[in-house]
Image (cartoon, rainbow, N blue to C red):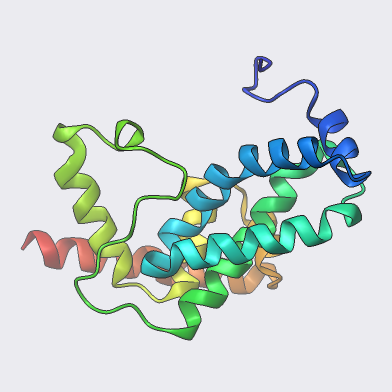
Amino acid sequence: MTDADGRRPDLARLVRAAQQGDAFALDEVVGLLMPYVGRVCAPIALQDAPDAAQEAMIAIVRNLHRLTSPEALFGWARVIAAREAVRFASRAPSAPGCRAPTAPGTTADEQPDARDGELAADIRDVLERLPPDHRAVLTLRHVEGLDEQSVAGILDLPLGTVRSRLFRARRGFRTAWTTEDG
C-alpha cells in the first residue's frame, strides 16, 4: 500500500524496525531500495552499474543504524548510490559502444516501449560518451529532478563546481547528440 506520493505510509516504522534488528523488516527495506538504487547507478556507472548498486546496498545495510530520519530513506540511499556509481565509473572508463545495462530490479516491461527503444538507445549512447562526473550531474539533475544545491550535497561538491559541470555536461551532450544525428 502506498500514499498519494507513491511512498509507503509505514516506511518510517519499517526502517526503525530494521534498525532495531528485525530481519524481516530489513529484508523488506532492501527489497524496496534495490530497484531504486539500481536506477540511480545505471546511467552513471554504465556497465559497472550492477557492481556499484551492490556496493551501495552493502553500504546502506551496514550504515542503516546511522540514519536518523527514517522517512528520508530514499534520499539518503540516493546519496550513497550516486557516490558509489561515480566511484565505479571513475575507476574504469567505459569502452566505446558498450551499452548501459538494464537497471537492476527492473524488467523488460519497465523499459521504454518499442517506439522509444531507438531514442533510448541513442540517449544512452550519448551519455556513455560523457565522463562519469558529467553523467552523474546530468542524471541527478535531469533524471532524478534534483536542484543544483541538492546535487552538490549528494556529490559532496561546491555549488559552483556542480554548475560548471552541468554546463559542460549539457554542452557535451548537445555536441555528441548533434554529431550522432549528422
